[in-house]
Image: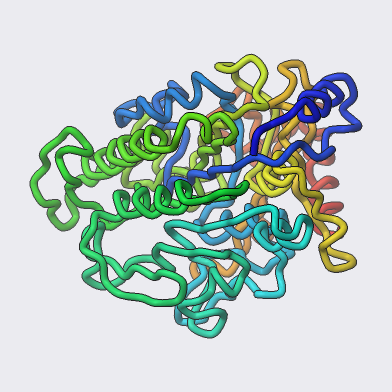
Length: 444
């Protein structure tokens, strides 16, 4: 796993010529940490929210890596997870809403080629891989308890779907490689325990995704040692914000334990990605962020999440990337970092929407790789399908025949729908451009 001069040569070439942006690098490790229901307003390094949990370990990743200012996901858990693993937008995979166990919404088809399968097909025997934590992509008819393994992961330990009934952070159904039983271990602690058990027993390059449950409901008081707080039991219909914040503080503590217990020589060869699956839920949103624009909406509060990358590729750590990125881009980024190209191993005709973020890691002056970012939500039982697309300034949303247009430079909180008034010539041009880009994407 030692990086050689070939990596330096590859990196130098990328700095000079962005046509080489997808060239393979030497093999290393990737550790992807995904929080649940955490927007940019809840991470200290972003400096955008009020009533922010204590996140010193996540903030340290930002100080030692690259922080992306505008990363969009989808508005719900399953949809984002599918884009990360496939590199494909939801309208291609069919995962447009939560994957529900009653099969009323589709699960991710086992015919989709996901990250671990690309590793195995593109570089057989070179990588081990594990999925730790939340899956939320299978149901009783597609994979069942073995869904993550059948989808391609060599090892799975975690929770398959949302908690139900009396389940909570300290009483939840844990599944390990197809075998399920209730666990009394605080779920964030268990997920770090399992990640360490995997990472610290590997002898070759590895990919490990740790998709945490925190800070998803149901909310409760975490162990005092994790959150540095003592909270009474939550009451029905009470204020959940202290419990939500405590779950994030506990998550940060456990991330610190995870990173401090991986040998330094392994961390030196590991790219660490911290991201979330969607924005903060309304009940935990605090002004100036708008609860009505939080999860699961397609407003910025529902889509814009923290994305931090730290690793040996990062030039000039501690900086901010202002270019637009999307969770779908993690697919090609992970593969580029690990030196695997997907196209030779994907079924013919497979459309990949992912755009590598590797140039942004290698070069502080890298030009934008995207002109726009896109998100969508469908199969929601309460609403018509929704679509959103934005560039660096303007944003267009459509739900059925209802349209919205916002100038995010002048109206970052999306309070004035320009479609309800008379558009200026600039606004007309941007409306046409975004709707044309959207139409072209959906026709592709």
